[in-house]
Image (cartoon, rainbow, N blue to C red; front, side, top):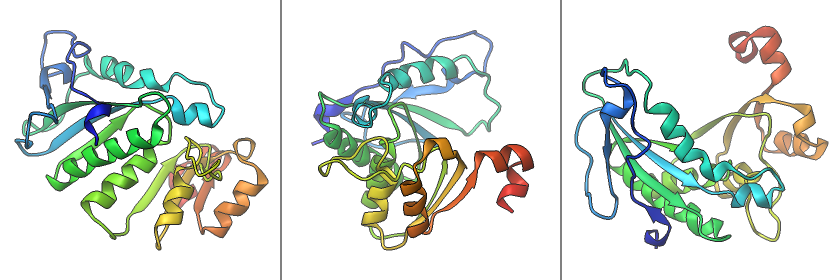
Length: 226
């Protein structure tokens, strides 16, 4: 069940200058426990993922659980230059309870599948890169068996092996590769100091397309990817 991990939207971070339009003027709350469907065209649904567990398992620096609140607070006062038909919902947070990362990922995946099924666009903020596995679950829930491409802007491949069948912020794309017959993955900004030789070998084995940070900095993104 996704309910124990769900936290309804809180509009407290959504404030800023009064001259409209700014994002805090546009945002509408959407409580998945009460509201049933999105209304409007060009619908975007913001979902927070409050989790440090994936980073902790990966022996990284915790703090990503605070990301959803910080992102909302930073986005709120920014001017909006999009179309008048744009509809922007805050769908609340999924919160990792204790060390139950798998339950939180399944909960987020369920909510994402609901968003996809209604034709809206989800945007997930906060948490570590373990959020990518939840996004995979959401796509599989909405479009079972269909193939999709992944573009990752990151210094890391995040193809680390699982520890005792447990995923982390460093494993999501290996988890996806193990589930999908067709694995189409491109990583932009790879750093040799952020990946072991074994990870480069794994990327080669899986047919990962990647471009180094050095190439992108020296040549630019268009020439590097061409």
